[in-house]
Every structure is written in structure tokens, then in C-alpha cells.
Image (tube, rainbow, N blue to C red; front, side, top):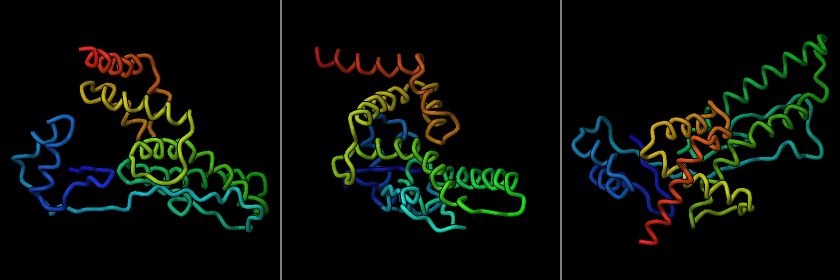
Amino acid sequence: MTLGGGDRDYPPADETGFVEFSRTLPTPLIYDAIKDAKALTPVCSYRGTENRLRHYDRLPRYPENLVIIGHAVCAFNPIYGQGMTVAALDAQMLDECLQKQHQRHPEGDLTGFARQFQQKLAKLHTIPWTFAISQDSRYRGSTGAQPNLGTRLIIEYMELVLKALVDDPKVCQAFLEVLHMIEPPAILFHPRIAVKAIGQLVNRRMLRVK
């Protein structure tokens, strides 16, 4: 069982406080599921939630025969569960690039390989990085670069998707598949998802009218 919080509103590290924190969520489903459950382990708290991206691909001079992957390049807020997936994709890309390099230069020449690889890796990180910072920038206490208009629109749309997935298993499944990089983010804009998300906006306006 994992609970997350932001803007200094964090789940307590004691069992009673942890369960009570779940009562404050928008839906009672989580609280109802755990209020009478027996904990198998103590509550563990972790506050290292910053996102960090190092632009090795932009270095004017890059050393030969050195590649940097995983969290050394791109580290995420662990609440999204992306870090290990991205690190695995980094390793997979490195393997594929090395195989292609060997096909072109069977004698083992790696001149320029490291720089080209870092530039290609940066493109791989674009989608998960945008997803992570667009969500974290929703918190008032977040620091760092401010999202542009396009990112702000994505934030607003994702807010609607998050509301829709509470009551719709298909929306929830699509969101989790994108979150864990099984499917591309484009599926969240599929009409069957968009209708559910926009429906949340319509419901919100109707409530305001009432």
C-alpha cells in the first residue's frame, strides 16, 4: 500500500496516521479497503521526490568511450514508478546502438558513438520527463522551470483524466499503461478516453450552476 502527498501534506509515518490520511482522499475506496486490514510491515516514509534531468547531450565537447544512462541522466519522482522502466529502456537502447555500431565498424571503432548515443537517449527521455514534471508542477510548492502553455494544457487535461479513472476501469487501465510506458501517451487522447475526461469538465460546470 502506497500513499503520496504534496505541498507539505504528507502521509504520516505511523500506522494510525497513515490510515487516517487515506480518509482524506477524494474517494473513500482506499480507506474502506485498509481501515480493518492488518499491516505486514511498519510504515516507511520517503521524501526524495525531486525530478532531475542532466543534459549531457548538450555538452559542447563530449568525451569518447563514455556513456551515461539511468538515474545518472534522468531521475524521477518515484511516485510515478517510471525510474526503473526508463533505466531498462536506456540499457536496451544502448545494446541496440552498440550492435548497430558493431555492424558498421566490426573492427571496434567507437569514435563519436558516445556523443551520438547521449543525443538519442535525450529523445527517449522526453516523454516520461514531460509527464513527470507536468504532474508535479500542479503542486503550489514545486520549484524549477515553469511549464509552458502546452504543458499547462496537458496538466489540465490530465487532471480530468485522473478524475475520470476513479470510476472508469478502462480509463484507469489506459492511464496506468501510459504511466508505466507500456503504451504511448497518445492513447489518453483517444475519443473513448477524451469523452470520459471532458465529461468531468461538464459535470464540474453543472455543479457550479446548481
